[in-house]
Each structure stands twice: as C-alpha cells, then as structure tokens.
Image (tube, rainbow, N blue to C red; front, top):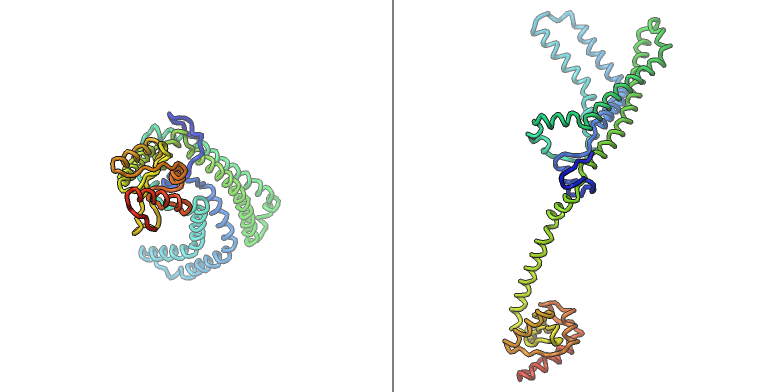
Length: 358
C-alpha cells in the first residue's frame, strides 16, 4: 500500500523527476515471474527442437566411454581424467540450453525495464541490518503475496500434473507390456504435455504478477502535496527567491538605464506619467535610440536627472505613449515614428542652435 508520511497521504501521481530518481536507484517494476515463465517456455520450445541432437550426442558420448571402459585403469589419475572428459563433453552438450536460458533471461528483463545500468542496488545499506525493519519486511504485504504465489504455483502444477497423468491412466496400465522404446516415448510425451500446460499456467501467473508489480511501484512512487511543492522548488527554484532575484535584476537594469539619461538629447513626456529619453548621433546611428523609459516614479526620476543635466523636456503625450509601449531601452525607434521624433529633435536642436542633419 502507499506509504504515509507526516506531511500527508501519497495521493499525487509521480512526476517525471521522481520516476527518474527511482530508476537511478534501480527501483523499477520488474517481475521475477515474467523471467521464470519466459525462460521455462523458451527452453521448453528449444528443447523440443534440440532433443534429437541432445540424445544423439549423449548416446555417442556414452558409447565412446562404454566401448573404451576396458582400457581404463582403476587409478586416481585415470578416474580424474575420465571425470574431466565426461564433464567437458556434457558441458558442450548442455551449452545451447544454458545460452538460451541466459539470453531469454536478459531479454525478459530488458522487455520489462528497458536498458538500465546502475550500481545503486549494490551499495551497502546499513538500514537493512535493523532487525525491527527486517521483521517488518518479513511480515509485509509483499512477503504475503510471494507466499501466496508460491503456494498457488505448487498447487496448480500438482493439479495439472495429476489431471494430465489421470488422462493417460488407461495407457499407463499397459506400460509393463510395452517395448522399452514405446515406454520411453510414452513417458516423454506425457512429460512434454505436462510441461506445456505448466508453461501456460506460468505465463498466466506472470501476467498477473507483472500487473501487480506495476501497480505496487506506481503506489510507491506517488507523492504527497508537500513533496510536490518541495520538488517544484528544487527544479524551478523557490518563488520567493526568484522574485527577489528578479527584483534585483530589475533594479540593476534600472540603475544602468538611469546612468544613460545624462547622455540623452531630449526627454519626451506625457507630461507626468510617462518619460522617454532619446539620443541621436547622425554619424553613428541610423535612427534615434531610446536610452531610458518609465512610468510614474521612474518617469519622475528621469525628468529629475534631465533637469540636473539641462536636457530639454518636451511634452508630447501621443509620441511618449507610443515610444514607451513599442521601444525598449537600447533599441532604435520604429519607422512610423521617424517623422514625429525628427520634428521634436529639430525643435530641440533649434533651441541649442544646432542643425539636425539626416
């Protein structure tokens, strides 16, 4: 079940970051039943294909050993050599089965969790040595589910085996009268039928177990509302801190803007609510540039600096509003305002006794 914390119940769906954190720790939805069912089924299918080759190679090995049995001396070195010979050749015969089992187990894991390489689960965890927590895990819901699954598998396998043998009971009555080859064929056919039915049951249990494991992991990854807020702070930053940083940045930008006002040629006003400082140098600029702009208190500060440096203040509310809404400090004025601003600059230069050249 979902864990509870002092900050509340885990009711919120896991975020992408939380899922990534769980994955880095190796905590993923992985069912051992899926691996077991896949390996059992694939090996069974491969065994049906490999049986003729297996018995052929095994027979050749036994014939080879038996035909040379009279040549072996009963000494420790000879017995050791014979043992190594048998183990080597049996390993070669069994190697395809081992390879199929390894590849199937690997692919079954990848199919469940994808590509995942992490050493986190291998790190020592001293909390696992706590006997109290160990007992809690022993009597946990997961342990109970594992016990039920194991009992269910044993019961189902025993029941299927019994029902299959019961269905073959009539043929089994005449086993003693059968030739050895027919007797072995009967046993092989019955065993294969049992294993095929067991494989079907294991696949069914694997599907159920995988669904349960996915559900359990989703419940485990759920978050409390407080955890969501803390994660948001970690990823996006504390809103209060971000607000302070934004305020500091704005203040720094405003200071730089105010420092540029003394270089302005004119300040166009609304007259009291808006102020825009302009500069134009026909030798280096294609169009007048806004050095500073602002409303209310900022506009008052711009006007104050302009008076201190004898910069003309020109009242023109329409142009002031358009410049304030359309142009940012450091940008040139748009083409549609060229004529209006040129007239204002011409008037300012006439006051200064300077001619405006375009």
